[in-house]
Image (tube, rainbow, N blue to C red; front, side):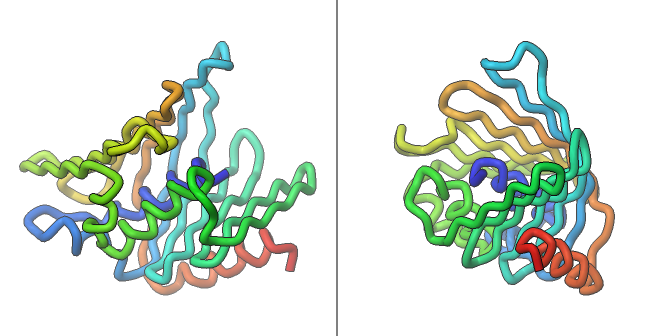
Length: 202
C-alpha cells in the first residue's frame, strides 16, 4: 500500500510556481484537492489498469487518496500511520509509521518533500529539478538498489493547474497519474477528517 500512497503525496505539489526556491515550493501552505486519472502498466496484466478519483492533502502531513473507479477505496497516510479501507469487501488495514523500508520508503521520501527537506532526500536519491516558461520537472533517482523505485518523475505546467506523475518501480512496472487542481483552502480540512474517520471505521 505504501507504494500507492506515494501518488497521494507527490500530487500535493500542484501549487509549485516558477521562480522560487524548489525546497520552499514543495511545502504545502494550505489543504489542496486534485482530481486524478491513473494508469498502471504491470508485467502481470495483459491490459493496463485504470482508475480515477481525488487526492487531498494538508500541511500537517495528512494525505488521502479517494479512489472512485473502478471501485471506491480510501487510502490515507497521516504522520503516524497508513490506512486502507475497501467498503465493498470490508477490508480495513492500519500500518504504524515509521515502518521499515522498503514498505514505507515512499512515505518517508514524501514526508520529507512536503517539508521541503531536500537535503534528507539527497542522502538516498539524486534530485534533479528543471523549469522553463512551459513548466517544471522534478526527478528522483535512487542512489541504492534497495529502493522500490527506479525513478520518480513529476512535471507540471507553468500555471500550476495540471501535473503528471510517473513512477517506475525496479521491476519495470509503471504508474502514470494525470492530476488537475480542483480546490484549495481550509474548508478541505473537514473533507479530509471525514474520510479519515471512514477509513478508521469511526
